Image (cartoon, rainbow, N blue to C red; front, top):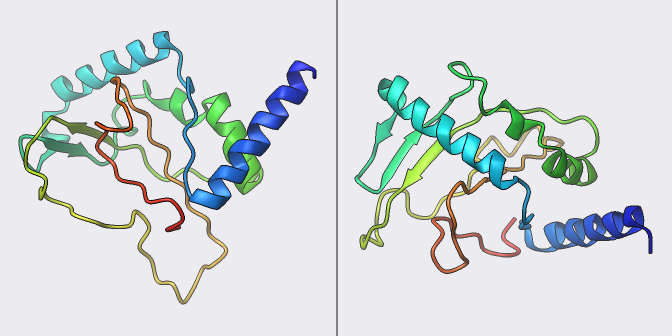
Length: 156
């Protein structure tokens, strides 16, 4: 099998998993150098724009729209690995909505703010043609047992 055929097979498998489960993990979507660059930008954003952060608790800190202030995160939007996958799922006409940053520090408070929610809440009686996908990049090492999101297969 050629490299192109292997890549096509990989994406077909990923798309099938996404359609079935509602999520897919794309390993190595960012290189170690890209992760280091993004972590540096993340720290710089924390320092230069402290007023943009919402501190919900010691373990949950969030900022909603980083792009008006810095271009360092632009590469994540046009990431060729993720973009290739999204085009296979959604087609070539893609639109980007927002870039948010989140800090999730370790906590023993399992009932912390947010609880269960869906990322997409809209008037379901209109605009059914709009398909929305969230892309999450982890900038620190996590495993299936210690990441901060719960994704329930098949609930999409």
